[in-house]
Length: 235
Image 1 (tube, rainbow, N blue to C red):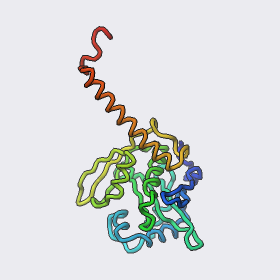
Image 2 (image 1 turned 30 degrees about the vertical axis):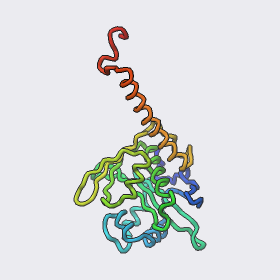
Image 3 (image 1 turned 120 degrees about the vertical axis):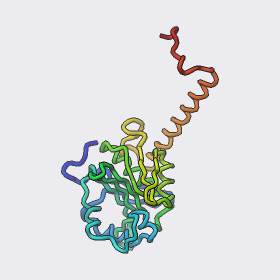
Image 4 (image 1 turned 90 degrees about the vertical axis):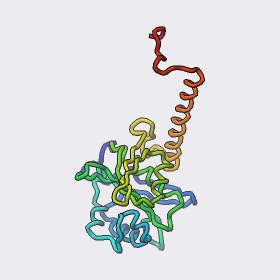
């Protein structure tokens, strides 16, 4: 899929997702007008969740940061926001994003879920979708600086089958995340529901694992020397 021209809002990425509890959540790209939604989300997050997201203690979300988080080009920078109705108004409960850092020449990945909406499958669905959208735009490798105690994001990456390398750096993990199915074994974003997309990724990982086991058993059972497999009779 080609990047949205001139930062045009990509409505094709809007969807309704179903959480483990059966709750319906509206997922859509972040807009410039989402200032209040993001501030409200920040104010609802615990100090620990804020620290895991920003790796520093913040009592409020600076205006320049809000501007940066809401003004994206939907190509090298993309963000999805999860919205529900709460007390007769819209409320943001999670955000997932990736963004290209020209100084470091890398794409950073981040996901944050409001504390009272955690452990309901939202994080894994949001992370899966934002990574798939990045892949639509030709991005398959990411970096992310994370707190060593942030077991939640580490668990999500493992469940989704992404290849991750962790490098200790000044008390944090500098992680390199690779998307294994780039352009090959992945259903196009929007083709499947989020639940099915996660299942699809895990199914492919299982199939590849089974194939590797089968090949290993084949060589062991038939006592085949790999270096001499293609002998003169075959050639």
